[in-house]
Length: 134
Image (cartoon, rainbow, N blue to C red; front, side, top):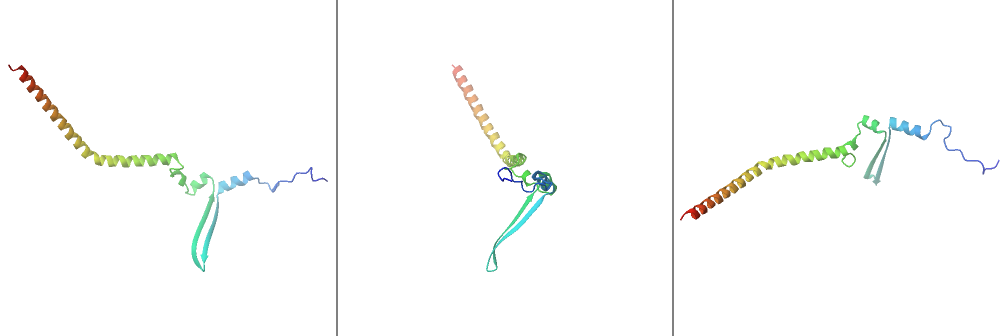
């Protein structure tokens, strides 16, 4: 029997489960991988890193109460809209606090303009009277 004509059999063939089945099961049920890394020097803990990895489908993650991507503006356009709406509401509130003063200033400006207009009208009337007088 020559080895040249024979192909090696894939690993795990015949086990009844292929990669797609395993992945479907993992995503459906979810899997948690946890680990800690600790760095000690003479029994003094210098650093601890706790690692947690959850592999699950979006539906399963939501079922477990994990939905941080929905509120992250970098990952969700809906979150960006919420952020913009909140910022817009804050700016409108600040503007509303400032507007009463602004309205009064504009009213005073308008009154001064009206006063100047009235003065100019009076000046023109006087000029006409002077021109009409012999």
